[in-house]
Image 1 (cartoon, one colour):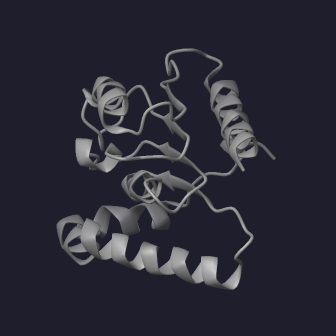
Image 2 (cartoon, rainbow, N blue to C red):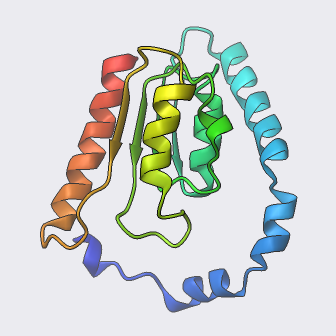
Amino acid sequence: MSIDEQPWPEEEKQKLRDLDFPAWLQRHNPERVTLLLNGLVAELRRQHEETSIVGVGYCFGGKHVLRLAKTALMAAAAFHPSFVTADDLYGIQAPLYIGLAEKDDMVPASLPSDLEKWASTKMKQNVPFILETPDTEDELILQQYQAAFQRTLQHFSQFT
């Protein structure tokens, strides 16, 4: 079954439409989420000392993967990261792959150029950084996203 044959149920879409997003963000502010994720990573390291930890974040989670890439991850990937600031890239030492959509209401239009600038000035030197923005006008968009997924897997394989 292909992706387009699996429609997102309308009742699930409505749950998102009804969500009080500002209230949700207050309960899930970056400091609180970072604290929770740092605790999770510390526990994973305690229980599995020899395990390499990588991170993938999508949208809201993208910011948090960037933060974890400073100290806790062997490699990181973020897709459509939202609420990202220059400080989120400061000190990143894990190899980083970022995939953006050409048009995304959750991120500013300047994000691709901002990320390029921040990666070159904020991340630790010589840390691998890849930023891709597929052409969504291209009729082969599904193949591009599949290729991006494969490159993400290769990225993790290379650095773990």
